Amino acid sequence: MFSKIKQLMTQWGFPAFVCLVVATAVFTRNLWWLPLTDWISGTVESSRSVAEDDHASHDHDAEHDHGDGHAHDESSSLALSNQARLNIGLTSEYLQPIQLQTFQKTISIPSVIVERPGRTRIEVSTPLTGTVTHVHSVSGEAVQPGTLLFELRLTHEDLVKTQTEFVRTLGELDVEKRELNRLEGVVSSGAVARKLVLEREYAIDKLTALINAQRESLRLHGLSDEQIEQVAKTRSLLKSLQIFAPSTDSHGEEEFKLTGRKVVQVSHSEEPYSPLVIQDLHVKKGQSVQAGQSLCELVDLGQLFIEGRAFERDANAVTEAARRNWTVTALFESTDGYQEVENLPFAYIANRVDQNSRTLSFFVDLPNKIVRDEANSQGQRFLSWKYRPGQRLQLLVPIEEWKNQFVLPVDAVTQEGAESFVFQQNGEHFDRIPVHVKYKDQRSAVIENDGSLFPGDIVARRGAHQMQMALKNKSGGGVDPHAGHSH
Image 1 (spheres, rainbow, N blue to C red):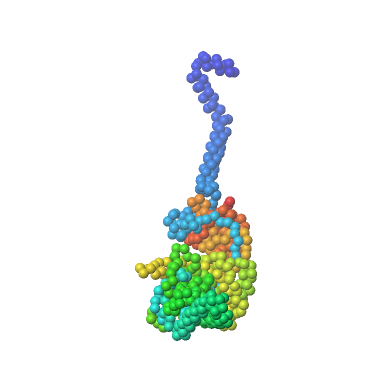
Image 2 (cartoon, rainbow, N blue to C red; image 1 turned 120 degrees about the vertical axis):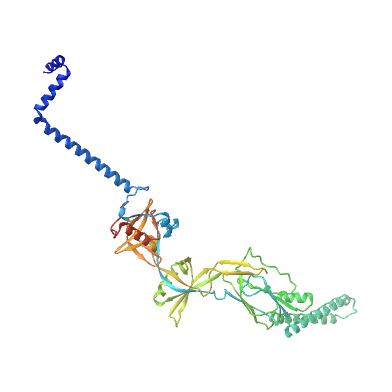
């Protein structure tokens, strides 16, 4: 057959062959037309379905694939502009990776800052009667231990008499010693009896005993050993007294010095002790003062106590926390919320309950800080301390400890119905994650470590409520509370 077709093509040419093929197709169209159209339609429809599926898959991946490779549900994802983040205070400080940590459940105890008995207040008094001739400091001024405070002219009659007798006795002793030396030089020649030498020795012993008694009398009047030795050396009466600021850690006779001694001021740049503040100044220049009278009152605010007042139901919890050497947190109210001071150790717990308030007092150490330190044109120094006696606060005393917990600020969690959510950063978006809140107080929320969050996830630590409202506004209504996150 093929040979005949080839022969015809040779004789009649190619046009005749095409005409033959077309005529044959027309006469036999009932045999091949319907199967051909069905095959073409099926092929086109199949190709269209594959293209649509590929396009849908591409759009879904592009929509849900962000820079960090995490997929998210658009209905529970929120994009915030930089301005929006600043409006809710969501700075880098509040976008930090979360970690497992130990959480301490606490109770709140009303407290007040108090002075340390025997340490905070220092009374400066005069040991001798006299008249104030100089006042070198003013109320409110900060001074260092060793700073000259007052100068007094001594007018105590008994002191003047005792000093006079002491100086006279010293003179008599010198005379007796010179006479004894003279007699010992001639007694060997026999010109003077040995009896006279013995009489002089006895007289010296009596004067020495009298001088010792007079020294003790001067000590009782308030003079230091150094002052007494100065009187004995110069043979002049103590006419005036300089009184210096004492130290809270050591007390010596250097607090009272003779007039004319060199005064060494303590440098403010290298302070071995906390500066003392003159709380009350009790005397003025020209005023007469009696022995033992208070001249001023100094306060050392470098270390204070916080007195917590626990009710009877909390007394055992406080005692147990102290026994376990747990530290407490001080909570101060401020204009921008609350300020926390952590890791404060227990000092001691009182051994009796106050009969009036029925509370048990316990005390916590509070290191203080200087927030203002300035000097005026006269060189007088004035301080302002951060914490002051009488200031009220709350003490958070731990009563229970949980390990390996996610702990977030309470502003990091929002609630809708029975569901609680946090917002996890996912590239440029924040995904809302449902979580189980095990415990929540006014400061912190403890999140169950159940796989909803993992260490290293970045969670918004504030503004969760505002983000929740923005997410609802975005969806135009209620939000599916079961929207989750897939890691």
